[in-house]
Each structure stands twice: as structure tokens, then as C-alpha cells.
Length: 168
Image (cartoon, rainbow, N blue to C red):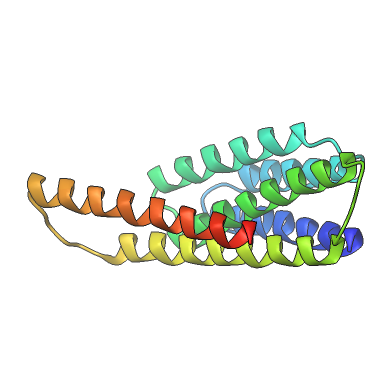
């Protein structure tokens, strides 16, 4: 199962790298090369199990995506790069914790559940971000506060439900 997790991790980092490079290729070719180089660095260090590089990798990818957004680049590529980069970051840390664990019971089931949760969170996050980019709703301050409060309540209920289901 560790081999499959490594493959999914490498795939998500590769998708993040290529998406970010595709976003920048029209505006600046050399920035695309820097992005590809940073993605290759992250992938090369992944083989050695160093999860600290993932922190710098996701930081670089998010900063580059924000910079690209400020330049007016294609938001679809930038959003895909950030979501895939976050998945790569999460899986890099998951693999590091997994390899450091002394006892491994139910390895396949734990990895499967983690991948399913990650897929749900990444897909949901991508859809919500895409909806916010398409939506042009106007709210006054009171409605914005009410919606933010409702969002916090729904998020805490979701986290509690996931924790109680995970403990069972």
C-alpha cells in the first residue's frame, strides 16, 4: 500500500507542477521552468522521506498561484495547482508519519480511508472555490456575517460527525 500512496503522492505533485507551469507558460516561459524545477525538486526529495520540503513546496506553489492570479492568469490552472499541491503536501506528511509508525495495523484500510477523505476534501474544495469564482452575489454586511456564522456551525458539525464516525 505504501507503493500506491507514493504513486498517488507523486501524481498529485506532478499535476500541481504541470498545472502551475501551464498557467505561467503564456506569460513567462522562465517562470514555468522555475515551477517545473521546484516540482522536480519536491519529487526527488520525496524518495528520501523528507517531509520538510513539502512545506516549502506548498508555500511556493500557493505564492506562485496568488501571484499568477494577480497577473490575471487562467484561474482554472492556478486552482488545480493549489488543490493538487495541497493533496501532495498532505500525502507527503501522511507517508512520513506512516513510515515513522512503530506499529502498522490495518494498513490498507487506513490508507484507503485517508485517500477517500482527501479526495472528498480536495474535490469539495475545488468545487467551492470554482463556485466562488463564478458567483457574483452581493450581500450587505449583516447577511455576510450570518452566512459566515452558518458556515462555521456547519463546518464544526461536519468535523464532529467525521470524528465520531472515525472513532466508531
